[in-house]
Length: 348
Image 1 (spheres, rainbow, N blue to C red):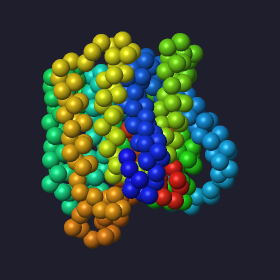
Image 2: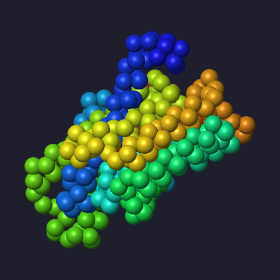
Image 3: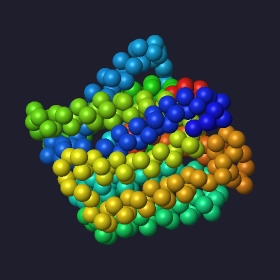
């Protein structure tokens, strides 16, 4: 990293790069760690997770002296849609993809988030971007056909990918007003009553129970590390690297998923999973290496309004990674979104 990146020093550039890599690595652990709580009631477990994450993020808001911001009715609807799609339904997709096909497939598919955002962000995609997208599609097919995933697992993984994309798109109108930390805290807190209501409908009183030791550790990890810490790491990196360079680190997500599965005792990935994951990483790097302007956005022949919208979508990447409150998200994943120059820091 050199001093020409947004005018920052080499040391700060390296710190930002390390922060982006760490955020995406944490987002990649989402699917494998979710496998630890696969027997815990889905909605109740997510309510516990986001309660933990919201508590951490509210504490960060207090430490930063960020005051409550009053929202308009339209902004409240956007925030609710953002929470439902980007957090609630996204995590259901991740859990079900992991349950039906293993964590490596879920992590691999979610690694395609940056390219999906670029393709749906308006403007004419460059040939290099389209080539990268093609490699990602082939890599996902290899991971599914030659790995442990099947059609059901792939469907849930693609569903999660769509939700993560929606998380970025729905967040763009909110971030200039709320900023990264507040947006992450708000959606995490709003997700709790949504998940409790869904849990009551699905499981009744059984939606919550005392977790065993492994489940408690998994829930705490997802709440504090993937939801809160990954968000803050990602938003430290975004304004310093710019969305184009920061987006390259999304290639860390599938690698992290594979490594986490191995560490948790799931054994090494199959040849198909490993090859597919590497192909997805290669496709992401090809697509995100498209020529950039001085502002770090992908060149396009479309009008400046489309270019501005495309940049906003790239900046909105997560998640969390929600995604990581990744993300992601986060995401990827994950995969929590921001007006980077204005806030100095999303919730992934």
